[in-house]
Image (cartoon, rainbow, N blue to C red; front, side, top):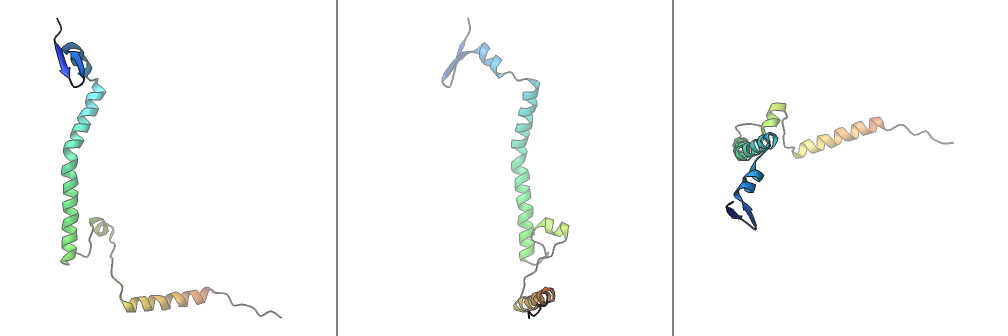
Length: 108
């Protein structure tokens, strides 16, 4: 006689329960990958966040000119602009703009 097992809202025999839990090889591989992802992702994520925190703290105490590691890899140097930088930039912008504006011809 089949033994009856109550699982949640359903009642199944042990034989049908075991048959429904059997996985095909692809489902087994997919479940392994899913389990590995669920196990490794928190560790990889926290490692990434710790590296970002380390770069931010190093940038805060002027140990590095970069606040993100990929800015160091690419070689991007971010700098703050002062008031004189804005003035010189505006003057440069106006000089370039006046060079590009064509001379208007007088109409007779």
